[in-house]
Image (cartoon, rainbow, N blue to C red; front, side):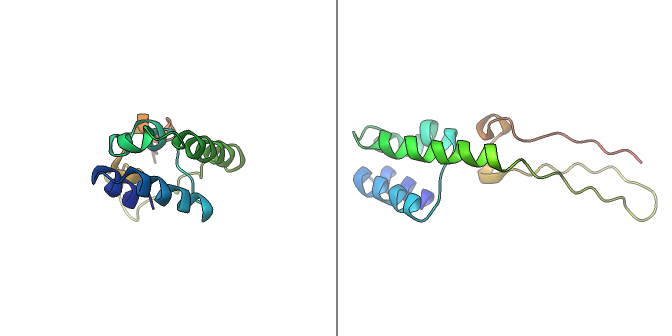
Length: 111
């Protein structure tokens, strides 16, 4: 729903983009602060008078999810044999930690 809304917004079809986002809400989806308030692809949609109603509901759901579902603890497994250096950083949507609300933790495991 989100990527479709971005495409529609960038294609000059903001009303259809907002309808795509609303359809996502109807299906139980929600989006956090960065995509709702700052993603440049949705700039044209944010200008619509009814956008704020969508944004408020999406952010309410995002806040509820953060309150009721603590972040999962990382799974760390020791290698067989001597340890080797490895750094893996995973995050969703090609975004940075700042955009994800600081929910990415840096972890160092030593054997």
